[in-house]
Length: 130
Image (cartoon, rainbow, N blue to C red):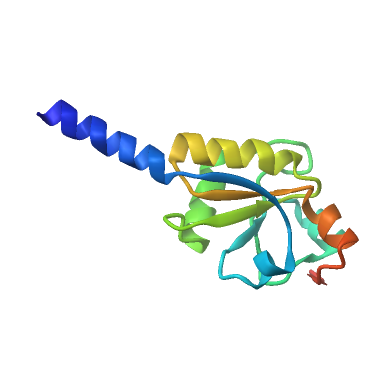
């Protein structure tokens, strides 16, 4: 009986996790869904960030990363029991990270396709970072 309950619990958790891939839109920006910008501080300064997004660097300038540090900061700044979005420069980094967060941690994640480049091309308001 315990094995059946545990199996159902794991299955239910897996089913709640969802991974979506969508382009950034004004509707997404205006929604209550947190948008986490995983780029580097230099990238944030270069282009700005999406209005109300939360900058949390994943990969550093050398391509290194610390998953535990990222998750600690993410969980401190975002309610990861609810849906949130990830954005980077072109969508390549968030494609990998959102897949990991969804499959391994069962987070409900929106991967922003084509990243900040797409946002700039669509004239979505970006806020300067100092």
